[in-house]
Structure formats: C-alpha cells, structure tokens
Amino acid sequence: MSSDELAKAGLLTGSAPEEDRAKLLQSQKAAFFFKLERELEKINSFYLQKENELKIRLRTLIDKKKILQSDNRRLKHAYTLLNALQEAFVQFEQELNKIQVTIQLYKNRNNASLLLFLSNRNTSN
Image 1 (spheres, rainbow, N blue to C red):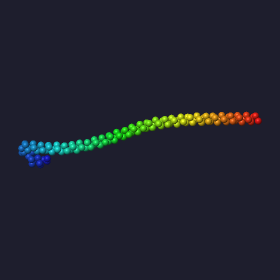
Image 2: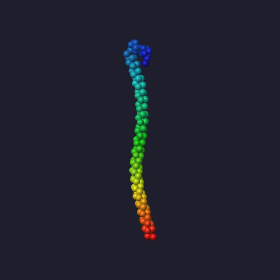
Image 3: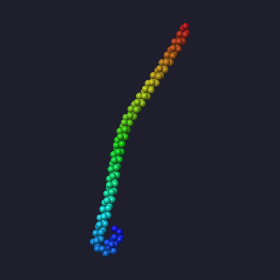
Image 4: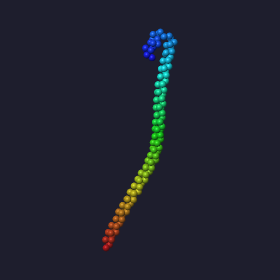
C-alpha cells in the first residue's frame, strides 16, 4: 500500500482506530503471504521439472554405462580371441620358417650330392 493510501486510511496520522489498522495490516499480511506462496509454488515447480530432467538424464547415463560395459566385455572377449589368433599366426610363421630352412638344407644337400655324383662320373670316365 502506498503512503497516500495509508494516509487516507489514517494509519500515518494516527487518526484511524487501532482496530482498523490491525485489519489493514492483517489483510496486507495475507496478501503478502498469498503472493509469497505463489512464488514458492513457481520455484517448487521449477525444481520439480529440473529434478525430472535430471532423473531422465541419470537413467540415460546409466543405460549408456551398461551398454559400454557390455561392449567392453565383448571387446575383452574379442581382444582375447585376437591374441589367440595372433599367437596362431606366430606359430604358423615359425613352422613355415622351419619348413623353408629344411627345404633349403635339402636343396643344398641335393646340390652337393649332385655335384659329387657329377664329379665322380666325370672322373670315372
């Protein structure tokens, strides 16, 4: 209430009876708390909306975490399989190298035997 309204009501001049001033203060108090309640309801509504948004976000994050953990388990399994495959390739390469060395030795031995045979044949003629 403005000072003009209070003056008209006699609150500033002291000419209004005490009872009128009490009623006016009571009505102003009621109006103030009514407005305060409405503002608190707006604030509460805002925070409830934010709480719901955060609940949805939390659920989304939890779901993504589960997916990533599941993918991680699959990746670990794939990593294990990849390691086993890599070891198999290493063993294959080692066996291939052994065969190549054996073939090379066999060729060298055959060449030496052939050379010996040819040299023996030439000397016996």
